[in-house]
Length: 474
Ligand SMILES: *[C@@H]1O[C@H](CO)[C@@H](O)[C@H](O)[C@H]1NC(C)=O
Ligand SMILES: *[C@@H]1O[C@H](CO)[C@@H](O)[C@H](O)[C@H]1NC(C)=O
Ligand SMILES: *[C@@H]1O[C@H](CO)[C@@H](O)[C@H](O)[C@H]1NC(C)=O
Ligand SMILES: *[C@@H]1O[C@H](CO)[C@@H](O)[C@H](O)[C@H]1NC(C)=O
Ligand SMILES: *[C@@H]1O[C@H](CO)[C@@H](O)[C@H](O)[C@H]1NC(C)=O
Ligand SMILES: *[C@@H]1O[C@H](CO)[C@@H](O)[C@H](O)[C@H]1NC(C)=O
Ligand SMILES: *[C@@H]1O[C@H](CO)[C@@H](O)[C@H](O)[C@H]1NC(C)=O
Ligand SMILES: *[C@@H]1O[C@H](CO)[C@@H](O)[C@H](O)[C@H]1NC(C)=O
Image (cartoon, rainbow, N blue to C red; front, side, top):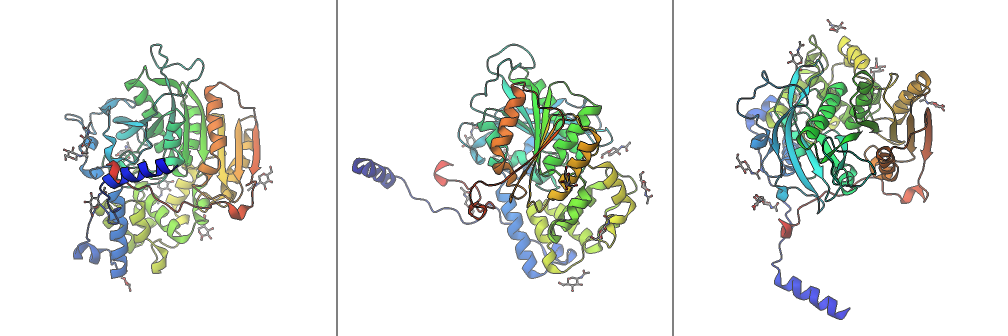
């Protein structure tokens, strides 16, 4: 013991001790013109700068907008794209120095062609997070050839990061969802194929935020593109997953699979999914309502020709949206710009009763439609975003209309929105491996409510930490 202690002490004594960074790696200041145009108080200027510089510091190396990886290759434009699922560019070995990954993982990034809501071709970025070695499943087949090193594929749809090109998970140090999703999946031996969604990464304005069928296209085509690039390494069969915005995307993908079956599909995990979006929004706190509605409004004209954002947003919201786009801000910056604490009305009265809202509610919803099972839906009962009663109603309706559909619905008592991923990790990891093992989920809906075994008050409710660089390691 004493020997061990003195060896450790000696090792530390030789290392140069560095102070942990307390400043951000970015120092952007708003200009007087920006402040005036968006009518920002001096307190808000400070808040917006802190949020923006924090977001920029979380980029892995260059800001996404400056990273040449996201530029289309020479000769490729939006008007001459090859068919959906085609690869446009591959970065086989991404330099992970500026990412904060668990040791043993490695990363590839690629650009590929997806489809917009109306079927037009659109370039999108994505990553593959590779485990050190693949998890083994008997009989798991690669897309071509026969190899012992076949990585089982998870197509992962990410949660909300924002609506500008700067909000691409593939250039965020912890890939946005970190240990809640991609890290854990990769550490369990799965290759995680994750699109950034159209408009995040490769610039595009507007971006079709919360247009789930569009995100679902991105998800399926990312998997297909990755399989075409690494046909001997990636499995033909795949599971789709996602939480929050990604949960809505995953459920939408299961509905797409009925109409456009993709071979290899094994099932979908939809965690805290958005279903009846306007109903869920009405249960969120006002800042979240503002940010969500601004996010949807900025993109809806890309799918609904007669829609303009000003049908839902007040002039001050339109001015701040312009600033958000100019800054290339993401969710953190938007949360400040549209904070309800300012007592400003950002949404037009009756925005949710416009024709645009009715069209959106009718066409972008999940549930009460056929879906390709098996599907696992997990939901926290104290979710403040994808409200539990709304998800439950969507599950109920779906189960009543399609009683044979294979749907497992598990509610986690006292668990919040993102927290359902760690709370349900045991269940969803087991469920995913069951799919690759070829187990058949029973027909029909199965409902379960699981609570903490120990005193609910003792359970950690929310994440109170961020991942930071260790300066000795960089
Ligand atoms: C620490 O912050 C400074 C800016 O204050 C930056 O130049 C430097 O790269 C940061 N180092 C790390 C390891 O983040
Ligand atoms: C600008 O903000 C101030 C409060 O900071 C408010 O009194 C004023 O009405 C706002 N102007 C507009 C055009 O929204
Ligand atoms: C940042 O971008 C420049 C070109 O703009 C490139 O030379 C450099 O390698 C990039 N650095 C990182 C860490 O991606
Ligand atoms: C990765 O980036 C770091 C920091 O810029 C650099 O020191 C290192 O040489 C790069 N590694 C490779 C393999 O290019
Ligand atoms: C389809 O959507 C794209 C992007 O959202 C848009 O640019 C294009 O004009 C649309 N095409 C049609 C025929 O509506
Ligand atoms: C806009 O178009 C949609 C669908 O094409 C339609 O349902 C709606 O009534 C139109 N709204 C207006 C205000 O023209
Ligand atoms: C619109 O929002 C208001 C206020 O939250 C609510 O009372 C009303 O029922 C909503 N309308 C629809 C169609 O959701
Ligand atoms: C869903 O169905 C169950 C019974 O199957 C019922 O107890 C519950 O109240 C329903 N919830 C909603 C929101 O419809």
